[in-house]
Image (cartoon, rainbow, N blue to C red; front, side, top):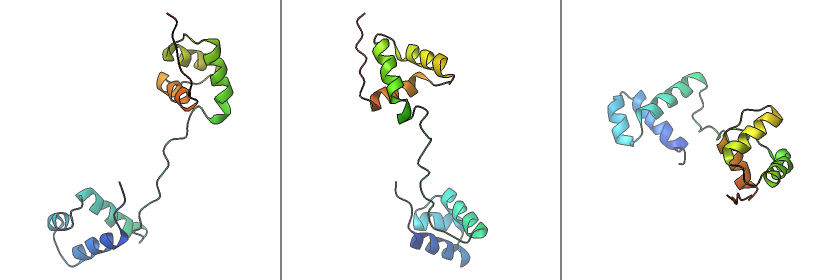
Length: 117
């Protein structure tokens, strides 16, 4: 979802400054009350209404530097489930990753899990 434009933010806060009730501002400009409150706090604290840059999310736990270790583990234990891979990874690396984390790493590396059982 795209951020609201700076122009819209300024118009919304200008309407508030002119005395328009918050409920009317929310319906007139079709913005949420939470956004309105965030913009008021931003204006009060920094004076800047520009949208913040995206955070980029969480840093991956299994980074590209671990790619060879993941490949080696999957090659050594091709029949292991994701739970088993995660438990083995945690034991060898002293981490606490979940089956979902090892699964994302395997998908990123395009590794398949063909079970023989």
